[in-house]
Length: 309
Image 1 (cartoon, one colour):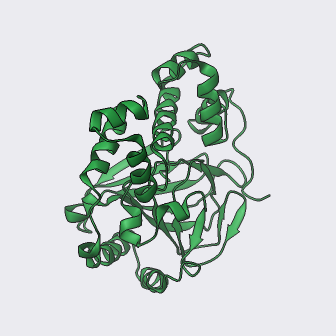
Image 2: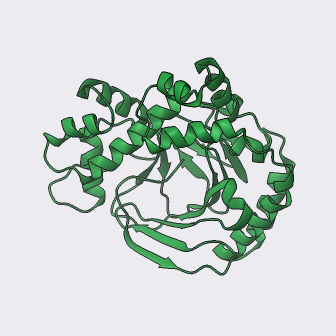
């Protein structure tokens, strides 16, 4: 899940010595989260969205929470710090596969949080990991041991033994590159369908998509289920809600939410509120107030709840 919500402050860009793209440091004083993110270079650009490193620190509130929004992709997470709290559940272990989801997760930003991860492009996670995306859909974090992925446990041990973000990313890249030749490229039809939806930010019907690509809707359904673990309609909804979140961050007065719903591709505000709430767990108005709080604006509401039940 992509770590996106309100724009982070104190952004810093710096060149990388790890053989990857530019490093971006993002900090949120309100929750104490520091997120370091770097884009891949070379052949891994075809399968990887980004590598990331999340650490917890002193925030402005007790037991702060960050929202992790779905993006249609899958990921890997490795824990090199304290036990992980996500969605009120305490996760202990070396690492997990983060499967496809349609609901934002809540990450507890404790002082000992120290996570390293890789986020795959939509449609590529299953091919790289050798796991069926549809079997992992909405399953949450799947422990490496439960999937009998000894290689991931061993990779975690090697990552924990290395000091420094760039050294760990270099090791992670070498691991992924070693198996890249065995990764089967997705059908060109999938790439075309994803590009069509992404360019329209999820707007447009699946019937229009099928007609544009001269295929049946049933074939698109099988294609998306097999490679993303989601249906075309579900992926399109995730894109529309993501676009809605971006629009909300730029919106000002209460009346603008009607415009946001329209610009996000909804015929009426009620359907937008329904999809937005189902995916993020917050209404558009609640999400905007949460964004304002994280940006440090006065007169805003309290942060999200505690990480623990």
